[in-house]
Length: 583
Ligand code: SAT
Ligand code: MN
Image 1 (cartoon, rainbow, N blue to C red):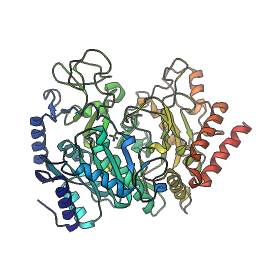
Image 2: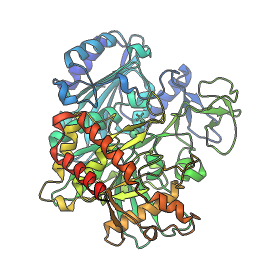
Image 3: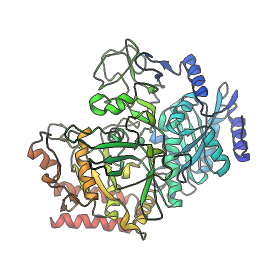
């Protein structure tokens, strides 16, 4: 197979000349192709068959032990001008970056098959969708991309018609971290990733394309590419609100998107549209609409069980690829937080000795979104869904209350820009330290954050600004003095979402505080939660002294971006500081 598109054909030939694969395979996305790849990987040891009686069509992939997470220190945005990448990105001159990685790609596919993977991010017939072609020497990448994107013939047809697509070149190289680079060339719609087989570094449709390149493209074209889950909340009266929510990696986006309503809230239904990425456009009527560019989930496994997320638990009992989980004696997948069984082999395949976690803390499942019992068929709607509310949030043991509402769009942009969260296992590095992570996009914005804040603010200055959704901040992770979580989280988060939906409908009360609008105790339905009044009070309280420090810290953080920071954002920050002084 080949293509009628001359530029694509030429690029594939050029890459083959550089990387020297034994053979070239154009992926069509068919079942037969997928089965053949899985068979080949079982033979090569890339995949291990799990217990097929309990977990039909489930397989385990063990990555190289040094290749288990995203590598932000090796991830670059290579714009012609350094300032365009901004202090939020590592930068390299594009000419130097190409030279550096092309050296590593030279001959890298000798003895391997080169896969040409055409894919579409978003419903194939959506005007908001964008296409790409990933060239990779990893069959694991192919089978994952098939679940995570609309991959194969239909995507290739669209690419041939549009003649505009993101070029992604990937090789696992020799997996040596010294020769690992994830390079983005947003001005050339190009990605070059070498030396890693891990999801976020290797499945180029995901973070590299749908966030870094797409955010850059979105700014040029007047839309937003965001690190946000997308869900529908259907009230007992049958009204559905769609909500997009940004949290950093491994902070519970998948669990929130698949939330199971508590027994005490009968009649509520949740619909999942996406668990990681949203592309948002303002339509002709001024309504913000969103699509999920992905078609599968690459979710954190540890902690998933019938109680925390029974939808996710059910969904991963079949047709799932597990990466870096442990296995039981009878070869079932096992992870920390699973309530049954015990690990025999750890994530590296060594006999489990009881020391440390058996599954890697960033072990993952890859699964088609259609296996989700509460999959929203509107995830396939080309026009997307109308957004009622945008949520920002992170892991904060202190300072941030359970929920608050921004005063307006511009204040909401400040709330997003000032977001902070404790780091997790999703990226290599120290865990549990608080860092600023604006809009949960610190690792993913493909351009200067100062310009990104400006782009967000600009959306709110158009003639339809009043129709934009309300913006909220949530924090499920507040801890008491003994380090115990104060809010039960998981399904009970629906109580907060209900208040948010009611605010959107003008039906719920809140009080003004210096940082925004907060529900009073009586505004939040906590019936049946068994929560004492003082805990609820703390969860909804604002400590002015702590917030003065927070606002100072946000000011210093914005200073890192210098004079490019929009003055409107600084005015918003001053406004909060003033209100705090007066309080
Ligand atoms: O980067 S991944 O997409 O592999 C996982 C994450 O960090 O969200
Ligand atoms: Mn993510």
